[in-house]
Length: 220
Image (cartoon, rainbow, N blue to C red; front, side, top):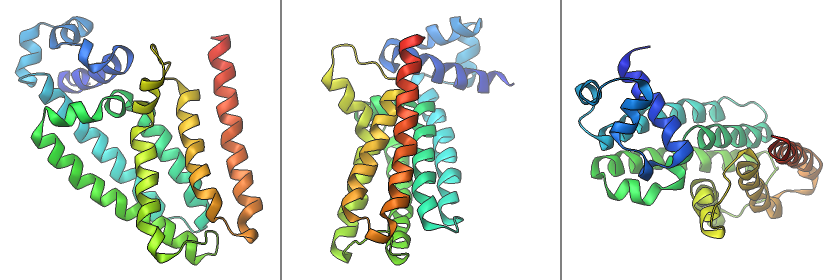
């Protein structure tokens, strides 16, 4: 692996474990066993590293969400949406935990973030339209934008919400699954009678994953 890639991956690891605000470029260099000068050869400062991390995040996001368009069974798109959300939040926890601050410090990052989010909103909206056309969800046309927005708010700011509820919040897999269960709660009122059984099976699957994650955290 190239030094630049090692710096990116080490930064993600340290930011996730200790919080982006608590990590400096010197910490990253020491973690990798390289000199600060070597790190600065690849990145001018920590903001440059975060921008590079976001570029990786954006690539993952776009490629993962592309799978929603390839789903034959519309109900499967809900499960794929859950998987995408879990994978990305798990990998880039620090970004979701401190999003407003990170964007306020880096105008170019904020611009890129807004561009990507507009594309994701379109894909989520298309997913909801497909679920409506398949008679899985009963959504009025005037409710579509609001529901799309609520889904994005829930996934984007769930970790930020958790951090306001406890002095020392524990952000683990169980906490992430709790956020995913909120997506099911948002969709549930719109589920049609004919799709209710399959929807509840899907919700039960993620509830089991949440419980397993919580039990693993206790025994760890």
